[in-house]
Image 1: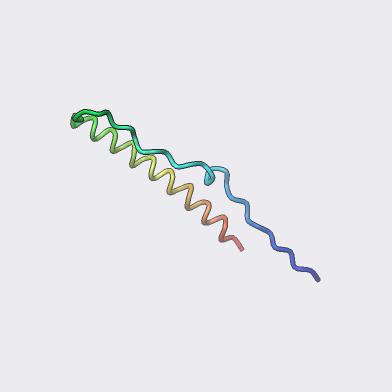
Image 2: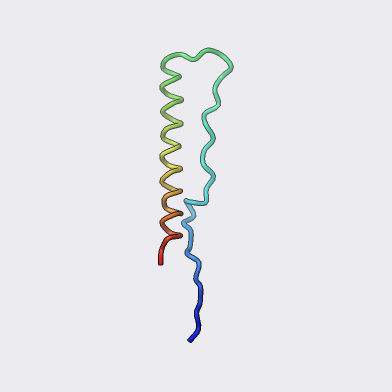
Amino acid sequence: MRTVIVAPEIPAEAKLKCADPVKLPDRDLTGGETVSFWGRDRAALRICETRRAAAVGASNVQ
């Protein structure tokens, strides 16, 4: 009998770099711009967390 350690395969999506926050212009933002930029950053954060969770899930497979 022999023991073989098999590393789990990490999903490709989980290896992608998380998006950088939106670059803000060097001026006061309008209310609409504030909401829009905030929304983009929040969406990117959720996508990144989904990928991270997939990587963690894949690495915990036994």
